[in-house]
Structures are given as C-alpha cells and as structure tokens.
Image (cartoon, rainbow over all chains, first blue to last red; front, top):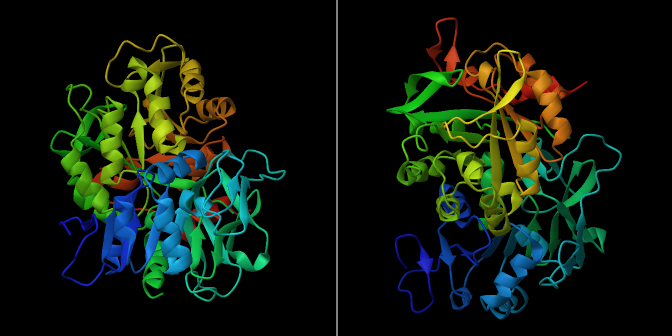
Amino acid sequence: MNERGNSTGGDRPEPRADVTIVDAGIGNIRSVQRMFEAVEGRAEIATDPAALAGCRRLVLPGVGAFDAGMTALKGGGWIDALNAVALEERRPVLGICLGMQLLCRRSEEGGMPGLGWIEADVVKLDLGDKAGLKIPHMGWTVTTAAKANPLIPSDEGEQRFYYVHKYRAVCDRPEDVLCVAEYGTTFTSGVHRDNIRGLQFHPEKSHRFGMAVFRRFLAL
Amino acid sequence: MLSHRVIPCLLLGEGGLVKTLKFAKPKYVGDPINAVKIFNDKEVDELMVLDILATRQGRAPDFALIEQLAGECFMPLCYGGGIRTFEDALTLFKLGVEKVCLQSAVLRSPDIIRRIADHAGEQAVMVSIDVKRNWLGKPVLHSAAGLAGGTGSWRDAIRQAIAHGAGEILLNAVDRDGTLNGVDTALIREASALADIPLVAVGGVGSLADIKAATDAGASAVAAGAFFVFQGPHRAVLITYPRPEELRRLWSD
C-alpha cells in the first residue's frame, strides 16, 4: 500500500483497511477518503477490481450521468468484483449520489441497466407545483430516516446533508426506503437492502452530519 | 425545505487573502488556509475561493495551495481563477475541489464548459459573469481579467453559458463589490428570469436582509466576501458566519 492508501491487489502485511473506495473515474474519491480519515477510519482507494477481493467494507462514490457511470464500471471490469463483494461476500456496501443510483435496476437518465442490487428505478425529481425551483436540487436539505437504521438517527435532532442531483430512486417496496427528503415533493434519498445501502446526498460534503454517517458505517 | 446556500467568497491575491472594492484596491485580509479552517469550523454551507490574479498574470492555479485548502473543507468547495484547460479542471477535481468557476476560459472558448460538464457533470461547472453598470446605469458585461471577449451582452453571456451546459451561474455586480451597500436586486431579478439553472448572486451583501433580498429577487444562493471577513466601520478583519437559526429565520414565513 502506498502513502495515499492506494491498493492494486496482492499480498499485504498489515490488516486490511476499514473501507475500500472504488475509483472507477466517476467520483470525488479524495474527499470521501479524507472524511473517513477524519473519523479515524483507514480508507484505501481501489483503482483495480482485483483490489476489491477481501475488502472489509465497500464505498461506491459517483458523480455525473448514469450511463457514464455504468460504462465506467463495465469498461473497467468492475461488475463481477462488485457483485462478489455485495452479493456473495455480503460486505457492507455504501453507494453515494450516482453511486446510489447505480445500485438500482435502471434510470430514466440513461439506457443501460444498473447493478440491480436494489429493487428500485431512478426517475426525474418531481418538483410538484412549486414555482421557482431550479434543477438540479443543489444545497443543504433536511433528511429524515424512514425506518430504524444504523446510519441516520431519528433522535439526534435535525439531520441536514448536501445534495446535488436531478434524479431520485423509487423503491418497489417501502421497507427498502432508508431516508427521505423534500424538494418540491418528498422523495427517497436513501435505499437499503440487507448489507447494501445507498445515499443520494454527499456525506463527504456534509461536515459533522456526514462524519457521523461515515463513523456509523465504520461500525457496521 | 431547501435552505438557500450562503457562501463565503474568498479572494486570493497578492500575499494571501484579499478583499477588493468594486474590483479594485485589494486589501490584505489574512492567510487563506487559516480562513478556510475557520469557515469549516463554522460549518458554512459551501465555500468559494477565487484567484483574482492568475489570469491577469498568465499563470495556472496554485494547485499546491488549493490542495491544502480542499483538505480543510468538509463542505463543497468551488474554485475559480486561472483555469485554462479541461486538464486544469480535472486536476482540481482530483484535489478535492467540487466545482470549477470559469470566466476567461469561457470568453476564449465556451466549448470548455461542455467538455468539463460531460466528464464531471454539469453541477461541477459554474460560469462567472461580471456585470458593471455604465454611466447611463445600464448593465454591461465586464471581464475581470481585462479580456476583450465581452462583445455580447451580459444576457447573451448567461444564455450562452446555459446552452453550453453550465450547472450554475455566478452573477457578480461589480459596482457593489466590497461596498456592503446592498445587492443589485434589479439585475438579479432579470438574470434569474433568464436562467433555469441555479444562480449565485454576489456583490454588495452587507446584512442578512440583503441576503434575503437577493433570494427574493430569484437568486438560488448568495455569496459574500466583505460581509464575512470585515467587521465594523473601519473594516477590521474578523471572520464571521451567521448561525443556522439566523439563516433559517430569513426564509421561514
């Protein structure tokens, strides 16, 4: 492992990092790593799918368009390795922003199928009848847990996070909804099934609120 | 409920952080890394850092400094100043910068907007449009780096930026800059009507009421420099930021 915590697979003499962050060229990796370090987690960056083998927890950040994200994952040979970690080894997985959307079956934004780990589709934000709301939804928004969950508390005061997105996930089953927020209308801002979770907002840009989420993810 | 973003805007100039008056007379404010640390501790919504000398001096962004600044920010950081190429933007994203702010590069070649937006998403590209009122009081496009590219109107500049895929517009009222005298609501209103993407208004904020006036006029977010770094009639340097309750009260009915 080099000084940045980058891993390219192979033998490692020391214990595995707490979190492995997928770098498929589609996300702001450094900020995610920095926040995990700030909450005393060791976060390694994986630039090669082989590096995912044996990881303890996986984070999939993502920014940009759905098809661009899936193209990067497919083109980089990530799909099999990701499926192994999420569906076979069942390690804790966290998708962030586009990373959350990629966990779903498909998106209105693109034509390619997603990873399909969550029974949900991604559709445009519904601004309702609110005049003057601009796209994308960009800014700090109060977020509420939809069910008891280890990442977002219901009893620690208002939770606010930074959002930047034009699309949202819609789950087949209400029990897969982790949290919700409002922009025009109320929308699903977090998804969850078994060991797999996704958050529409950016914890790594949400200072102490995001740090708390990352700290709790490290405890999974 | 979406809170409108309130964004400290820090200017990098000779020797460190500076604050200008109507885009002139830069006054030294302090060390940029220290200031960013303080704003991070105050949990500001977002931070904007603009290098006001880079383009004029024909140099690239100070990547080493920017990396240090990004390292202190656990909220979105927007950087502008001296970004010439797509590669410059990529370097900035890798350093942890959330958004790049472009002005001169767009005047030279607006295609750079689409190139960056296609790679990093439109929300990562902010186009900065400076508007000055001429002697008739008519708003006119201004180039902070003195480039002769502003042949179109400021309205065209906004339309063009949007057409090329910008995610946000930074609308700077040059005459109000540093004055703490209030925002140019007429300008903001007109610009907001032209833009279906978020508009960040900057220039002239001197009070919380000014922030509200800007958002009432249609700004999605408001940036300010002097309001957050100066205190009192003698403009002593003191870094401040409103408490979350104070901001929330502005927009609750």
